[in-house]
Amino acid sequence: MSAGRRRRRFWQRRRTRRSFRLTREGKAFVLVTLGVGVAAVNTGNNLLYLVLGLMLSLLLVSGVLSDLALIGLHARRILPRRIFAQTLCRVEVVLRNKKRFFPSFSLEVEDVVDGEDTPTRSYFLKVPPRGEDRVFYPHLAARRGRRRFTHLRLVTRYPFGLIEKGRVIPAEEEVIVFPHIEPRSPPRPTRQAKMGEDATCVRGPGSELAGLRDYAPEDEARDIHWRRTASLGSVVVRERERERGVEHWLVLDEATAEPDDPAFVEAFELAVSELASLATASLAAGYAVRVASRTLTSRRFTPERSPDALYRLLALLEPRALEGAPALVAPHDARVVRVAAQIEAAE
Image 1 (tube, rainbow, N blue to C red):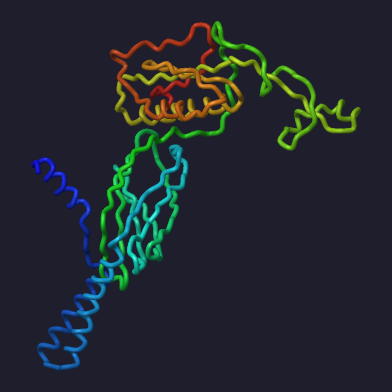
Image 2: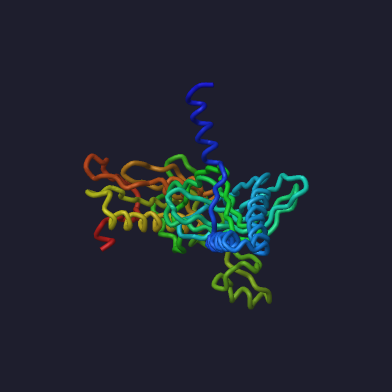
């Protein structure tokens, strides 16, 4: 076996070995046990020796049962398909007991995230033999970008709360946290389709009247055509059309003289969130979206497709130094919605 392989196996065993510590109640119990032992030796009282034996056996039983609760367990994490910054989501933890006859009681699973000091704990009262249990816990990502879940840690104080034992289960996963989205009104259309793209009219949100139709529960009251409703005796609404090919250009300037300045970083995060919110509103209104900055020009995102690719692009966008950065160029034939991430905006 090569030295590198032996080293990897050593560190893997070190990461997955069980931890052990006395709880506050356990430390008090050990001190009382030592006091009883000293008193039994000094007095020679058989009753004290009997009590000492019972207390020592209680410690032994506690250690054996806690080990039995931890062995044969497998934990895994199921992350949601989308995680947005500053938005609560639900993460599922699945704990499976592979033991044939013995259940596991009173278990906590700690989910450890890189860069965070306090892990999130999920509690399992009982996991039956050859069975599994599932628990959801709320998860909140403070910022967009890459987020790495490193491992899961099983912890138990079963049965008497005197000893806390733990075991690490490797479960490394990396996710992309999307920018925070807030409700926004879509900006006005900025650009028509390029030469060769379809520019016909289709049903959907817009300013042109396409005709009348019967009222549906999801229609808004402002779309009701009251005169026609009164003449027909049934509620009818206006159906509108939009021009396919109309798109919104959203431009973000990520360059600054001091990209590490905390004030600028905070203003930049707000600007990315604002841009993502405007893009979401535009797609919801039926318009296509393009995003541009000093370092990228995105493809055309359409309402018919999932916006995850757009969110991922914005999640990985980082500030950069102004010196040597490319010029910020917007289409000359477009009215651009700018989201300026300047330090003056933060002040």
